[in-house]
Structures are given as structure tokens and as C-alpha cells.
Amino acid sequence: MSGVTSNESSDPAATLRRHGLQVTAQRLAVLRAVSERPHATADDVFDMARAGIGAISRQAVYDALAAFTDRGLLRRIQPAGSPARYEPRTEDNHHHLICRACNRMMDVACALGGAPCLEPSDAAGFEIEEAEVIYWGRCPECVAAGRGEGAGEQ
Ligand SMILES: [Zn+2]
Ligand SMILES: [Zn+2]
Image (cartoon, rainbow, N blue to C red):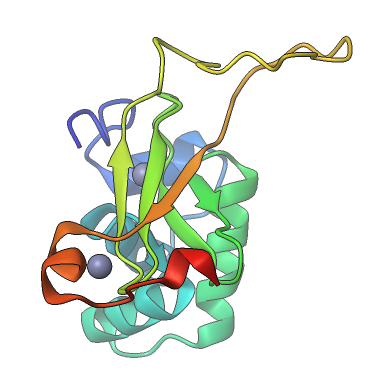
């Protein structure tokens, strides 16, 4: 998890300005929520932002997340069959582990060296910048508790 916000200043208002975005209390609350809890869903961000500043609509959260993702402040991860998650953009091409039983998501370093750590067997002439890998399985707690056994075979 080290270096998650290393490429951004710790001042969220300055971060917004640097990316050409107007600074509003709602945008600051959304940015703060994702920094505090990387891999949050839009619903998680909504709950955290509302707890932080009170008045914020779900639509305002969606709009802010979309604007941040477009401008490269946030990375959006879309696991198959589950809501999108958001994290601060790190440019480190890290990958993710997801537990099928409890939906916990964790960062994991590149499989091999730096980006793109995985070379396709045939790049079809593409200039490859990034490889996004999700490793699906069960976290140690779920394995120990016997949760989600056999989920991988379904
Ligand atoms: Zn789990
Ligand atoms: Zn991550």
C-alpha cells in the first residue's frame, strides 16, 4: 500500500486546481473519501461524504467520481459482476486481489517488474501501456471460516 498518494500533494484543494477542476466542498469530500478508503464503491463514497459534510446528493457523488476519473485523479476498477471501485491514481500499474466470498479488495504489486508487467503473446501491433489484472479467490479469513467454498467452480 506504500506510495498510494505519493504522486499527489496532500492538499486536496490544490490537487483539484491542478487538474483544472473547481474546488467545491462536495468534490473535496468525495476526494477525501476515496483517499481514506481506496477501492470504495460509489455507495461507500456517498456514505462517507455525507457523514463528512452532511448535504450531498448521490448524483453529485457520481458526477464528481466521473470527473475525477476522466481527469486522471482517480482510477476506476470495474470487477466483473460487482460495482466499480475507485482509488487514487498511482501510475504504478498495481493489480488487485478480490475475495469472492466477502468482496474484499487488496492491492498487489505487478506480477513481473513494471508496467506493463504482462506481455501479450501477440500484441497485434498495439503499443501496450498497461495490464490490468484481477486475481479472484478467497481471502485468508474466508478460507479459515469456510465462507464461499466452491465459489470458484460455479
Ligand atoms: Zn473474504
Ligand atoms: Zn488498488
